Image (tube, rainbow, N blue to C red; front, side):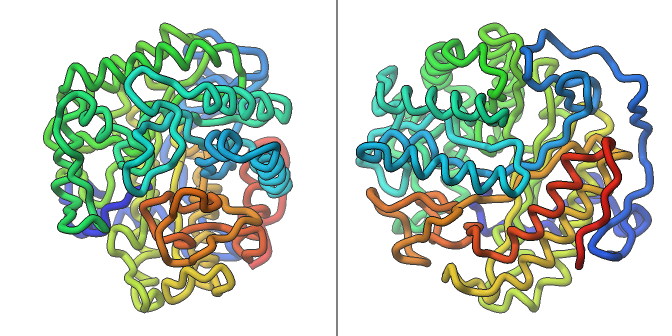
Length: 465
């Protein structure tokens, strides 16, 4: 997820964003829990392009701006659920495995067909505020328990006919990621962002932007790909993702070259599996982040487009008075989604809203706190995504993040080794964006999921308001 709280959508230029008039013309008012978009491109179901490459039986394929499975259009309703590999590997006995299966039962009951999980984490395990234990505790050394856990997790997803977007790297530090690869390559100590004393988000991001042109760092990452991808190349459940929220920063040319070359490497090793970027899309400030939705996804080795959306992180709302900025957040979210759907039409690839979340009322971290505004926000976002499926490359939605029946032992504090995994990664206050089975938000997700996954195959009434 996007962790920089200091960005503001208002800083985007006219070239970066659609105008308010375009948004109002493209987006109707909320009626009956649904949003309607006029057609902005034709996506006929009767005549579809050929698959982009070889396919696996039961696997997903891409044809133009659509996912397909078994020659039928496929729409994603999923959840971000980053923890299963580490959870299964670290728990004694079968406790982690039992929790994983309970989580899958809960998500499937809500209609999920796709999960987004971490497939690689980097050590050393003594570093602060990151997932431990890790799959790669030192360069080129892979923990057999973590590897076995990942293979077991994918095997279970295969049996359940679920799909996994498997994240291979991370722009942020909570799994090691690019910062750790740079440190291994002699790039110096990691300049950790807040809450590290004296930490700066800008300094951390600019440091990580050097990853793409550091030959030793990118080669060490490529070795991980060569080790891991062949072990899962025959799984119809697997979709590969280059990294969680990679940003070009001030190294844009090297960034786009890295996207193309890394995706090409994966395609060479696993030609029948899909590959995507893990990009946030435009972010709140695309120029500062070095992002361009179209150019970042033009590589022929990238199969579909991702984008993320973060209301509180980008300053659309501020705790504790979440209600004060809520109308603005709703307007900016509609604008952001509509703009990405329009831009995706220029690339002719499916578009996935891969991350979004919203805080509990008054910014509370208490699992029992109300989610009144979050529920309204989710209702709008799901409705807008659903109404755009027929007329744009929009192909699915995945909120952040599943916690299920697990609760943080110290809500509002940071994760510590040994704590259970909820939806919030270690470097963020636990309980911030976690979605629990008891939340009223789950009813909204379940009802919209049924409409999204059945789109084009059966008519169904809009969820009750």
